[in-house]
Length: 391
Image 1 (tube, rainbow, N blue to C red):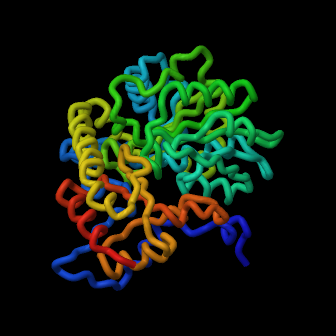
Image 2 (tube, helix red, strand yellow):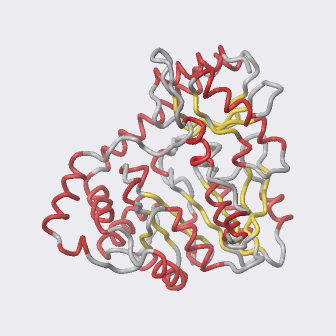
């Protein structure tokens, strides 16, 4: 017998979509274009890997249990980096390291919520957030975004109930790519604070924001850590996906509560991954800037080349960081089209229904394009195949 907490939770879209290509042979002249997942497919830079390899041989602590909230030197290094990035004083005591950013979100919900509580999340949503809320017995209250793919503060206010514990945002957004303006984030912060709620802000993709300077001023506010819970991932910046290193910044008191959850799940984050993350902080700022330039160029390629399919009725709804979010022009629903794209165009692309409530028909009109692993030539080929496709 299985728990309803898992049986009633949908299968991860990444897991589900991989089943679509199992056993499929793609023509040599039309290899698979995989725009389903945004995780880097290349390994970390050589210097980072060398630092981890050296630590594996010479640093005994790399193989032992460590502090539940992370290695002190990494907490300090990240606090300094956050302080510089947001031009705000953040201390090591306000920072914890987790086994990936998904675990950071899970620890946050564990510390905030109990059965029957509610968390407001914009729809389209990041599917793992929705999955964790479902498995935690917490109701995800969808906040439908506008035509600009941005959530509305007044609509969010109308959704607040006595069971609401938090509002969870992702910026730059997954799946829509939208970069939330600083004044919008401030408005959500003020809303959360006025109702005694937490504002969870997942900034996994902050290193690929197109804006210069701090993307917001929330960490500059007095007592920010009483309302804001900032989440981060080293996976994208340093290509450490397989080592599972994420982070939380909030009050020390909240981190103490999250520590109880973390201690019972992984005990401590991966030691070698933490060593690699610290090396990245200390040595890879210029390299990350180059990675950002490349991602921004691919974003520009999406925007410049979209007319190829725009003429056929496709619409570009959002574009930023690793993602473009689009609307298709066909009569069939996006899930059916997605399966046909695998067979007839060698494209693996996730339908918007995987990011929306089951009863919201908008998802069947939409797709997410994860373009971080597709260069300009690949993006041109993607548009060429989509332009030739007829379901």
